[in-house]
Image (cartoon, rainbow, N blue to C red; front, top):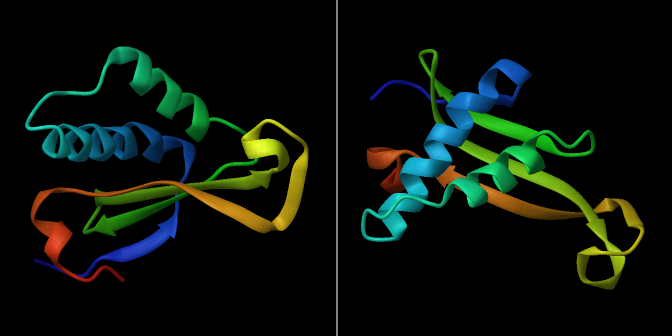
Length: 103
C-alpha cells in the first residue's frame, strides 16, 4: 500500500468520499447498505458552506474521508458557537486502510 496524503476535499471529491462512507457504513452494519435517505443527509452535510471535507488520497484514489462542521448551541439547533468549537461529523476509511495509520 502506497503513501496516503490528507488534503482538503474539493467538490469533485464528494462522490468518492460518499462512496467511502457508504462502503464503511455497510461494513459496520453487517453488509447492509445505508438508506438512500441517510445518503442524502450525508451529501447535504458535505454540501453545507460551513462544512469542511478532508480526504485521504492514495495515488489518486480517495480511501478515507472526514467532515467537520462548526459546533452549534442547543444540541445542534441553535446559533453557531464559533470556529473554536467544531464537531466531527463523519470519519471513515475504506477496507484494508482501517487498521493502518493515515497521514
